[in-house]
Amino acid sequence: MSKKRIILLILLSVVIVAMLTAAYMRWQLKQGRSTPPPAGIALLAEGIAHDAALPNGFVVWSSNRSGNHDIWKMTLPDRVITPLTTNPHTEYFPRISPDGRQIVFARSQKPWVSQRNQELWDVILLDLETGKEKLLAKNANTPTWSIDGKKVYFQRNVFSMAEIDVRSGKERILFNSGTGDVKKRAGLQTPAYHPDKNKIAVTLRYTQHMTAIVDMDGKLKEISDGCQLTWSKDGEFLYYVDYGGKMKNAFYLYDPGTGKSKKWLDLPGDYSHEYFPRLSNDEKYLVFAASKGGHEHDSADYEIFLWQVGTANTTATRLTFHTGNDNWPDVYLYDES
Image (cartoon, rainbow, N blue to C red):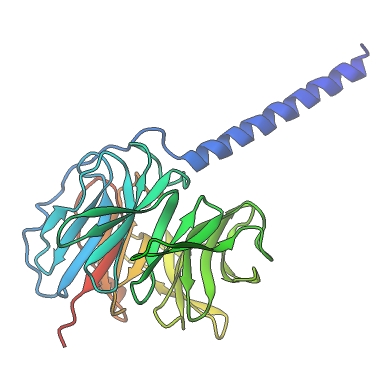
């Protein structure tokens, strides 16, 4: 064999090894942690201080403070904390029904699944009064409610978005990757459907990388390179996470009419890496999580905050004080008019 051929074979071998290594690293990134993160410890006696400045309602979120990720509830303004679930499987992404009586959330199909792995999940319906659970949809993730509370939208097997009628259990696929401008194998992360607009707000990953508004025929309008794009109730604005904050992340508003974005909220203190924004049912408050710079969704020390929309960024109230992982909050406020 000639020296030239040997050199070519060596170079080819190096390229193949590099490609296989990169592919393995991408696979690992999608899978996330192979073991659960540590549960952490309480920093303060949570839930003992009544705060008259807080509104009347409750917050739900995912936390691993009990050893694995369960769904927890904090009543407001008294800050009483109780677990809503005690399942050995991983649970996250709780969303409160429009009437405040039920939640839906994602539960893993085996005891530990990282949130980076978006395939091994089912959607569970939980009655907050009785505590009774119901399996709502198999192979489903990141559920959200319709405005009237009759349907739940969710991601199906990473590359589809579906809806289910809560009462009848009838399912329908709304959108698939590979439609129109959306590439095949583009992951549909946290898709949010607005029926009045007949459009999806979605974070695209894998073969595409952007947040976008997508028509049902696949025509898309790119918003940013961020994530967690969410509709307002009337569909007149959206909010999302992107870079540009004090510790990398901040929250932004997007106006579909003008096509312009503006920074909405970035905390000034130590906890300024904001994530998981969610407007209250009356859209007067924003609940979210923030860390001191840690990013990983299901292992970083995120704390839950509540901010009255339109007030100074210094007025956000920290609700949790625990070194474990607290993420994906939602908030429901009672109508006191």
